[in-house]
Figure: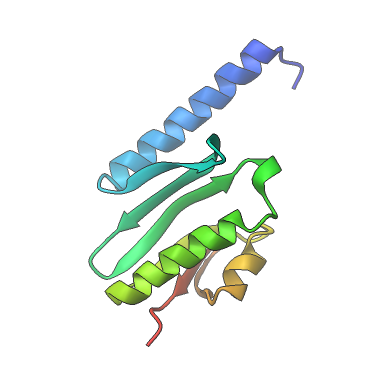
Length: 126
């Protein structure tokens, strides 16, 4: 888009605010956390801990923090928590998201095909 930096910033902030408001309305008891690496913000993690499942509402890392194992470690910690609590861990992911391979490697399976998105589930280890 032929926008200046101020316009781009305003657009991105409005998109973030709308997405964040929807998540907070629909997952009001979720934890919304900033991922910090070496004292610097590196991403975000929103997790809803329900009675029978843990829903990863959103996990995102800044580009410079991808591919170094941070996401894998975070997901492994969530899976260990799910195992300890006897809960499935679930996430929606876009069909062509490169992270899909990571989720599959960690044991997530497609529970439902929602068109653009896949609903993945990883049951607790027995």
